[in-house]
Length: 220
Ligand SMILES: *[C@@H]1O[C@H](CO)[C@@H](O)[C@H](O)[C@H]1NC(C)=O
Image (cartoon, rainbow, N blue to C red; front, side, top):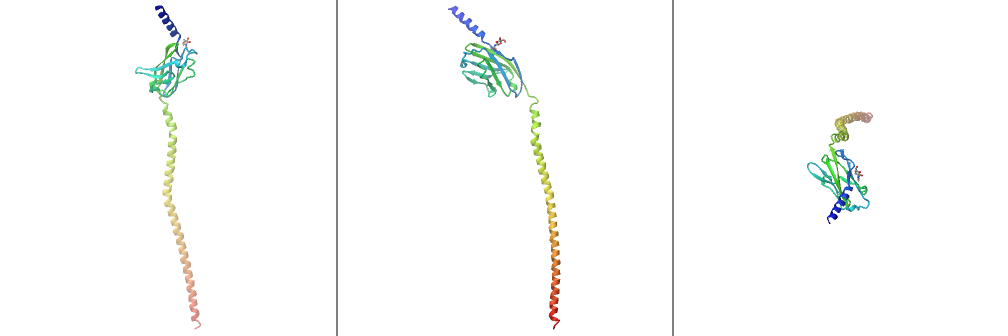
């Protein structure tokens, strides 16, 4: 009986000894808002059904531990810190490789990442470090190069509009004055011409009338 138990223990320890989880890189460095792929490898056997595979990866910092990726019975989950930012490459999982793509890195993603893998062959874990440095001068060059263009265009538009308005404000009364002046001048001239012609016609008429008047008086 004791022999059997001892045999079982040695067998399981033997199995545990053969199952390993390695890290392809022991430490990573990245910049804030960039993406990174963390990679582990484990002893995979072709006959291992994928449903019996459990992966539990977590970030361990001085303050807390948060789940980066958890695969259990084919269901994936993670903590809110990493929700929507982690993608596991399922194609390479069968080959015994865990590839986790972490996008839009934050400085608080820095720390020790540990992945535990449990299969029917055994369990093991591997650790790696990630340091995310703050983006110092990344958003600043974008703002002065991208934003001024619409602003300058707006300013140019504003200046053009203002000058047009100013010019029209100055020119309109001037034009009106000139027009009025011209109109009154022409009207005056016309009137003068009219009065002149009228007076001439009147004088003509009066002379005719005079002559008409004088005509009947002369025979009598
Ligand atoms: C893990 O690393 C050891 C030592 O580098 C290597 O011999 C072994 O093949 C690796 N196993 C896997 C599954 O990557």
